[in-house]
Length: 259
Image (cartoon, rainbow, N blue to C red):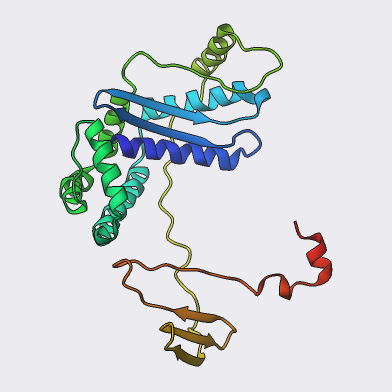
């Protein structure tokens, strides 16, 4: 539940970075538990040095918005879909897990007094939680993470003059007592855009290379497709897309101006 809340906040911060590209760079909202007892939650916003007060305001107000007003049903629905897809993919590709990753997972879990479970067990535990998850539950779990009164503010960067504690306190207080739009607007989940790809193209030629067991096809529109089946990993498909033929198809003038 906490993970869903932090994922929603991360999405909101990413939306902020997309709509305010001149003000905001990288954003992040995370929480971790170390050694089974130490818990750390963080909201990070990168800005230019001269806009550090604006960065503090963005972080404080987005966190306050989530703590006071929680999350919308559509936001939670998207997270449920994402978690469900991740669990299903983990189950489907369980046989492909490398030994090194399993060993590292065992070690990391032991540090937190946990045990490493199989993807099937993870899904058995998570499925009823995801099925009944509500925005209210997400908000309650999210608030519980931020409940301890030991919040810290850190501003890191290069400034003409060193920032003082008073500078940080005043920037935070200016935001904390400022009015902001209280709730996230309800927005329906838009349907996936790419569902109609037109009439299928015709295949002009097809051949098979016995030496490397590759099937090659050429379509009428010029697209070429190479397919090869391996037994390296089960239930996994790798795609590689290449456009054009590189610089051999570019004019000399275009090559000179290319970065």
